[in-house]
Image: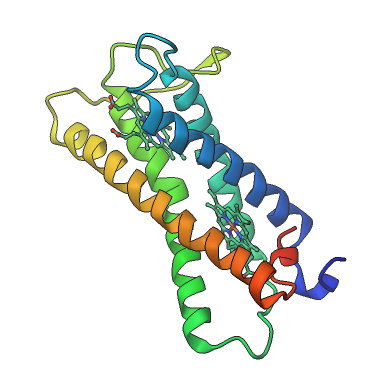
Length: 175
Ligand code: HEM
Ligand code: HEM
């Protein structure tokens, strides 16, 4: 059973949400598993291509969201939950753009070419490994990666809490 149409995110928002979610989780996994995979599989080129795709999808998502407000939350939703959900969602929109950007900045200084799934060259910023922007980008990429993973745990726990414990229609707004 679906939530009533007026309480659901539209088709474009739902498609972008799930595409971005799958790709982001794949990239968190490949990023954190990179060292463990050393000598078995160089996952970094795939990681970069997926991350750049997230940047494009994330920008499209943010643009779509600015023109298409979220469906109203159920009337009884407590204020603290509205605020927490709003803060987590806003942080997601920022991270979906800033995290790949820091990766792009960091990889611009690498000797390896940046090519989207090997299909075409992706431009690089004029950054070198001895610059401050490289150091900040690299540090931020790691720290924000951890922050992103932590927020996803909160977000998914909230979605599952609604679905399994409260047993309301919240998950279906995005399904
Ligand atoms: C949603 C997008 C992305 C996510 C969630 C993500 C996440 C991560 C994580 C968690 C790590 C491991 C951090 C560490 O332990 O050092 C990592 C490493 C890395 N990421 Fe990303 N990343 C994304 C996008 C990108 C993009 C767009 C690029 C480049 C175009 C990129 C390039 C790299 C590189 C080169 C490393 C390895 C850094 C090292 O040498 O240790 N990432 N990423
Ligand atoms: C990388 C993973 C994910 C990211 C970055 C993400 C991001 C977001 C964002 C930004 C929103 C707010 C949409 C808006 O108001 O424009 C949202 C809503 C939502 N997400 Fe996710 N999401 C992720 C994974 C998931 C997963 C795995 C689930 C389900 C278990 C889920 C369930 C939902 C639901 C139900 C909503 C609607 C909440 C509401 O009605 O206010 N998300 N998500």
